Image (cartoon, rainbow, N blue to C red; front, side, top):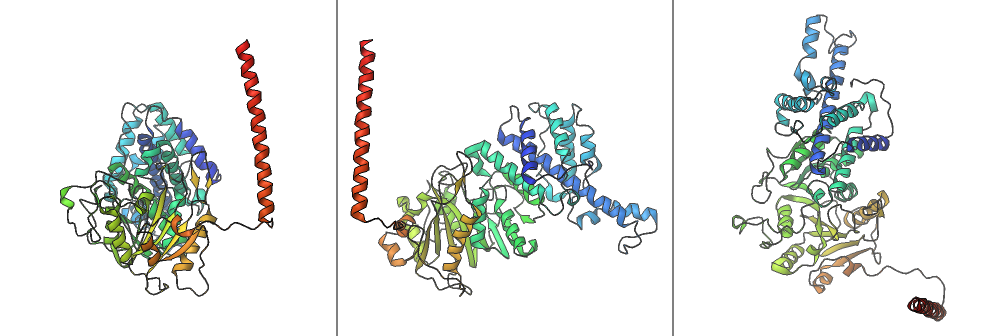
Amino acid sequence: MSRDTNKKATSAKTLEQTLWDAADKMRGNLEAGEYKHVVLGLVFLKYISDAFEERRLWLESATADPANEDFYVKNADRRAEIVEDRNEYAADNVFWVPSDARWGFLQDRAKQPEIGVLIDRAMDLVEGDNPQLKGVLPKSFARAEIDKRLLGELVDLIGTIGFTKVDHGADDVLGRVYEYFLGQFASSEGKRAGEYYTPRSVVRLLVEMLEPYHGRIYDPCCGSGGMFVQSAEFVAVHGGKRSDISVYGQEYTAATWRLAKMNLAIRGIEANLGDRADDSFHRDLHPDLRADFVIANPPFNVSDWYTGALRDDPRWKYGQPPAGNGNYAWIQHFVYHLSPHGVAGFVLANGSLSSKTSGEGEIRRNLVESNIVDCIVALPEKLFFNAGIPVALWFLAKNRSGDGYRERAGELLFIDARKLGHMETRTLRVLSADDIAKIAFTYHSWRNDDPTTTYEDVSGFCKAASLTEVVSHDFVLTPGRYVGAADVENDGELVEVKIARLKEELFAEFERSDALQTRIRQNLSGIDRD
């Protein structure tokens, strides 16, 4: 349990926003990319300290209660031994936190000038006692550019929030704070945010369409682990257990890899992200993995992914990807890691749907003709902090006619969702729960062998296109080519009447324009005389 017992449980939104606004004041001259690791590292340390203290209090109480037969021990020395037994913490998935790394110890010294040194030492101590966190926690709090007075204030601020069940019941307040902070940092960092963050509504859409109830989930460019978090939430919402899924990932950037490890650890999600950050193309950390689900948001249009070591790689079953663009290397990497019944859903730039340069068109043709491309969804603009270019979702399936699926060989589903979503801020659009449900329901009603649902094409929104139609478009997969224009509702006005009315309105606008031009000329003429 946390030190402050008088905390008030406010709404999650208020709590997140309050914490962010206060923490943001200490950013000073740190860039958002650096500041992110300072704040989230402290939040992580506070969480594991709270969880440790909560478990410790429970053990002290349980070993002193005769009604608790599992833990009651009459010998006082034995009771103390149990409270200090690290296995009793590990049994409840709680990290062991040494005394000098506990939040109470640090907060008591928050006003001291060496607070940065003490936090770095606390991170070292935690890693030393928890091998799964080795090399994960940030340890740069003592550096000169961090204002130690503001750092102490941040420690005090985070200390006012408890992350235990006592504080917030079953509400995952820590997960929400972490998710909110990642989103805020992504907004601050703009283009750089794509290295670690995929907007939540896009992740939710991918997961809702793939439905990863159980099995192996893989993301070879996992960022901060958002795909795994949402997959675990999906399983929980549908009555499953976290053990129903196995998580595998890889991340190229070391700082982002550490962020993912922390993000998953605070949620109790066990994941194999390899023992280090590394390049999925050149040093695949899971070479033998065949996943049931691949969920990913790879970097778009990467031009420096290739070296000669990748020539004739066994992953390039559908064609050698061009050295100047990694899009089709990612696609084939995903396919390579799918199990015989596996499915993949991922984000790519719209150019991947139509490009024919350097053999990309031929690779796309081979994918389609191999009956592996299942569905393409065109997304609205401004969903991503880092991508102003239009993007689309690809869905691939190794076995498109297996149990539970309608026979869809020789057919692709195209969904044009560009008109969905709403502007949450001046620059950022989000998909609502209704938007996500509409797209996912359309896909599942087409895909799944469920007699209670039927699929119908909707002009301007969705179209189940035959392979013949795709061939006629030279294997270009842009949904707009297939779904057509939306049906216009008949307002009951006769066509000839409507044309006459619109002509009259247009001529009236011409007259107003002429009058305005005349007035402007008169005014300008007056200026010349002056």
